[in-house]
Image (cartoon, rainbow, N blue to C red):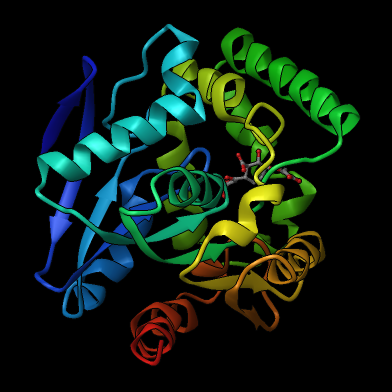
Length: 273
Ligand SMILES: C=C(O[C@H]1C=C[C@H](C(=O)CCC(=O)O)[C@@H](C(=O)O)[C@@H]1O)C(=O)O
């Protein structure tokens, strides 16, 4: 379905009748990221898969202001209100994890519990933030000047995804098609508006989140294992699951284990709190 908030058409797919679980994909992804999982998960949750602004079938406006974390979080809240959902669990992968954290900390009455896959609360150091903003803006310019095809060829080869090199062809080609279907202005403005450096640092606010957080990281993604261990020191109630032999995109590299983590581990974790 399409839900219009602030003049932006958001593509949303709802399945199931249990407790709501809002699914937020990563940069270059879409609600299709969750397609292998929602048939099972929707037996236990009401899954709400959204195409984040600039991605998938959701609009890609020219104005970068629509892509700020503040604006996107406000839109997510209005989408939930339109769906009649007062409270929801959130699952966010990478960029979607950053958005899930931002939303949980700014709309605490709406969010029950969190699953963060390979996520970060942003950068605390102004020098790191400025460097990241410059790098993301350069990458955004490259996407506009060289096109999505050239960007995807570069992006799928960044070190973070080296662990995906030996995945089956049908898996890597599905991810490549999801990326190639994106619009250049949507990806570019996503980096400019809600990139890791552009977003405000959420580190200081993590202790204010009162509900349970399940962090899922790949053992071969040391950078995000370290970030998860640092976040665990800040959250009131959290747990880390380090999935062996996989990297950043745990849901891609061990989809069976990831499906179980969401369907079983998270469900029993929140049941006992
Ligand atoms: C390269 C880094 O950051 C990027 C990597 C992961 C994030 C993401 O959403 C990628 C999803 C995917 O392509 O599978 C992305 C983000 O959070 O926006 C980051 O730009 C890094 O080393 O931090």
